[in-house]
Length: 84
Image (cartoon, rainbow, N blue to C red; front, side, top):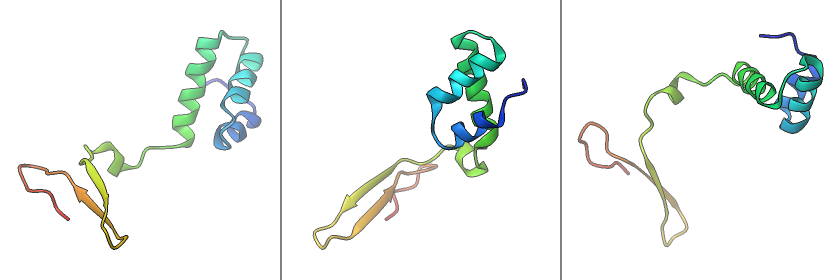
C-alpha cells in the first residue's frame, strides 16, 4: 500500500471518512475513485474482520415479550428448528 500520513489512520479510526479521503487525494495526487479505493483498503487493514464474521451468520429475530424481556430467535441452520 502507498505510504500514507498517520493522520489518515487517525481519521479512519475516528470515523472522519471525508477528511481521510481528502488527505489521501492531496498526498497521493490521485483521483477521487482511487482515493476511495485506498481508503477502503486501509480501513480493512485497520479493522480486520473476525473469523466468526466470515462464516455465514444465521438470521436473528429480536422480540420483546410483554414482561419487557428480550428474546433472540436464531434462524435454522442445517434443517434445525429455530432456537430460543
